[in-house]
Figure 1 (cartoon, helix red, strand yellow):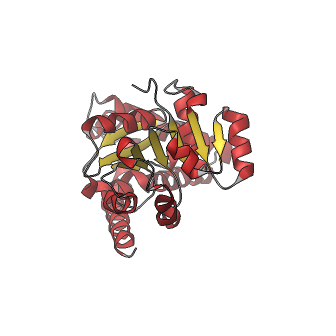
Figure 2: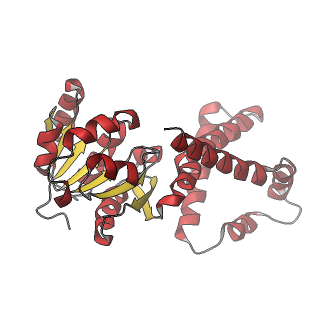
Length: 272
């Protein structure tokens, strides 16, 4: 689907670099057809050396020559960046934004002339090729446009399409979610150390346990509750541990964390 297409990445930061690397490693696009634009010349040198992509400090040049533009600049730099490129035949191009909290409405207004815009919410787990991301369409984006964004995001994990009104929920769940998982891994590790394991061994066991459990869920053959029951024997060790977790209201606490993060995302969007 990317045959004959050229991609420009505006902003060569961590997430932009991860997505570029994923596209190249999964053979979605050849490095020669990807241009990264950034004001940091040392970062461009690094990307050019490691990924063999085209680089430039000129946003206009990158956008002019591209079919798909990945907007990976910081939210506070969006207005200035979009005004700079707004006159460059935006109707013929697809814009994919990974800026947290910036709506498609805002992007469309800044670009003008009914641009095709997609909004994406990736997460930090893309660093390990296990990201969880969501895509939503603006007013003028076509259904087939979503497939381009999904393909790019699926190069570094899982990606789904959602209505934009649910993007704050995605932020609260999968955007902030890695922090909840890291906290649980840290707690399990500390418990293992407390009970006699070395920290290195405890951390490996805790992280692999989290990873393996997630893979079983993603296989989709059994509901998480069924998987939990498979591990829980009557009167056994797991049942004893689960009783403590339930007494500590782990379910309610995790649900409240997602709700709080979602509400904060909504507040931040409203405060812009």
